Image 1 (cartoon, rainbow, N blue to C red):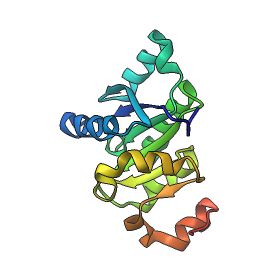
Image 2: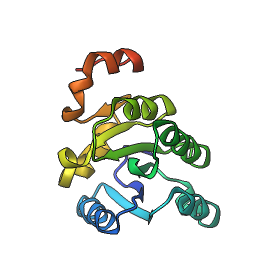
Image 3: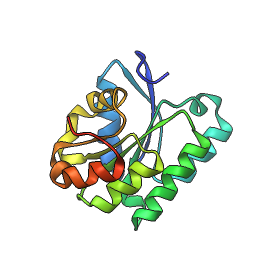
Image 4: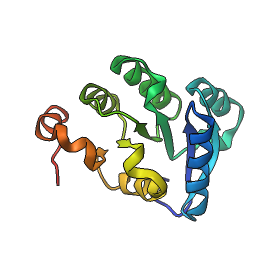
Length: 156
């Protein structure tokens, strides 16, 4: 169950160095456990089918650059949620794009976070998302009111 002491996380990140850094950041936090990692979502799906432990994910961290367009990102999120319906999807981005944020929120992601603003605080960000409907990092709030109106959210 997401929010418990041992949050089970799967990382989907195309950059091997970024993926290893995330594993390191999350491994230092006693509340999180990385149970798998891959460069593409289809490896997650194969892991879910072959390993029952992976099927009980709490969180999937998704590199948003794996999709070229916002509709592709929404499709990836829906695909992951189809195979891991209980998982919270957290998108990590390098660039602020309001269309991608909207697509992620509407597709069912729990968060859309800027890599530069989360950094080594990734484990805390993962747990913070448990208590909120949809989370974005402060640097992405420049899209603020319009974005929140479209996602039916409130900035607090």
